[in-house]
Length: 66
Image (cartoon, helix red, strand yellow):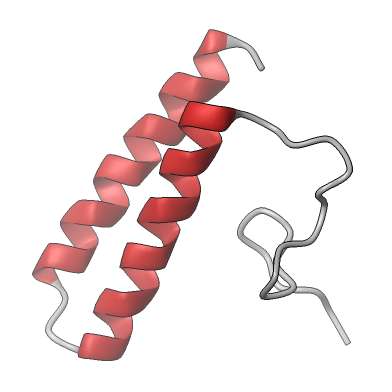
């Protein structure tokens, strides 16, 4: 993964962390914390070949349709 992609994901993780800290609703806070973890993992580990779906059925940040 190019360094520019890793930087992008690290920045998104920081933004999600800020959103989690400012959220008033615990459910919204939880979603932002999950997104923070996903972005941090992507920034640190990069893409995982063959791992298109995670255990929650997510591809990146989008849930499957259907």
